[in-house]
Image (cartoon, rainbow, N blue to C red; front, side):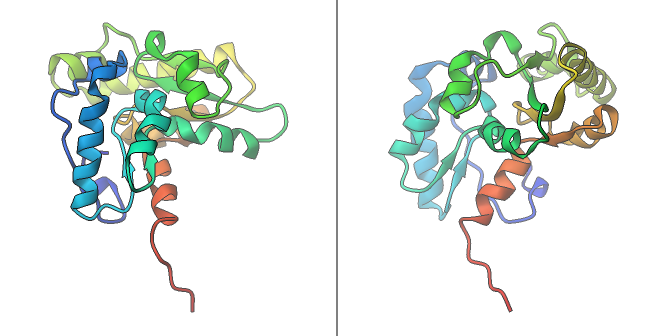
Amino acid sequence: MANAESWDFPVLLEVVRGATARRTVDGDARMLDDFVAGAKALVARGAVGVITSCGFLAVEQERLAARISVPVATSALLQIPMVSLCLPRGRGVGVITYDAASLTPAHFLAVGADPATPVAGLPRGGAFHAMIEGCAPYDEMAFTHEILTAADTLRAMHPQLGALVLECTNLPPFAARLRAHAGLAVYDIITLGSWFRAGLVERAFA
């Protein structure tokens, strides 16, 4: 999501200094002021809405939204309640996350989702974690294997799934492969951002 070319509309980017992947995933509350400052900087540059680049910030949704003068959407997890309502009877939503051990019921409750939502995470000792936290080289084949394996694990444990939500904002490039592999609808930060922006700008109808 930090690549402006991922979006079908103009975006502004702001780096929150000191917000490492691990600090954000672990929920370091001391960073809240830094995220507020980053959001306010975006608003000063003309942003009409703000989204963040880590799904674990779902737990800060209410606090961040309360302190920013424009709408804020912290996490792809915000889509879970709406997607759940759209699925056929008996079907549910599963989440693929960067770190399953760190994704708690509090994250789901903060976005109005069922805290018992099924979750599968990427391996902590795997290639994806090594890139994000250890600056290891980008290994598309290894990442694809880890992500599809997480989806297989989730479906094996919960065969009634009707859709997947990708918590991690680095996963959208793999969404198409996930849809083809799992045969499920897939939602991520890009689908959230596109919906979010649609309500923030004027559209003219002939």
